[in-house]
Length: 352
Image (tube, rainbow, N blue to C red):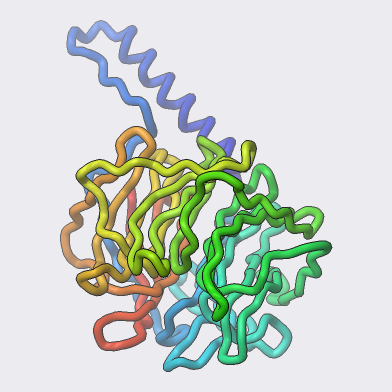
């Protein structure tokens, strides 16, 4: 299985070769040019159908394991009750399997964050909330053994929280988390968790930064080596729609100005990276008009663009779980909260 760096390098070489061939052709028609990887003309939704499965829930986490060709789901809540079950979805057979019942893993929780550590082939979970309080623990799930292990982080660590966000930088072997909420208030801090040493580093900026918030989303930008943060809610502004970038090398935040075309402010949405097209994808969430099912993309050079997709499409929702198949250019959306309560369906947004 090629690494992300090898995949994008191969894609670039193929584009360059195609351009050179067109320039040397005897065809009098002008050669086509492009500055980025091809993007689908017509992204489309497909409902992923299955029997059984994890059941309806919201505020769970979903990650994609490209080597295992599967999705892994953990936790969330249903009917107000916290969950700590773990499920694996085999993409080839469209079959869910319950791989851990919670007896020896993380406590039941919702509003936690998770990434897939490609170097160690593990799902890593941080923070969350339960009926008894908030968490700041770190757990790793091994899909090869179906075992959870608590990661004992050395030194100082982020305060307990819910509704934070996480961005994974595989090259640096680091997970970045930022902002969040407890009963004592919201945060505006930023931390890095070193997966090799199991140590936290406080990277909270002293200058400009996103206001204190929770229920926002973030992802890692491979090109600029930065963390992208979008939306959320705060005491000052109940529903946020701003977009920021954090540069780990300088420890600074910078707000990205938005033009006239942009998504409505929202929280409980989904933000996923589409590195092959140098952009990010936003789906759904809660807005001033209620829950939505719109799709938006953001690129550093192209800005925000609304994506029109023909039916069928998922119903409007918030608090859903999402994961990206980077090599397959697809975003998976599972469950969430719709107009009639918690959902249990899954959809795949094909980007190519």
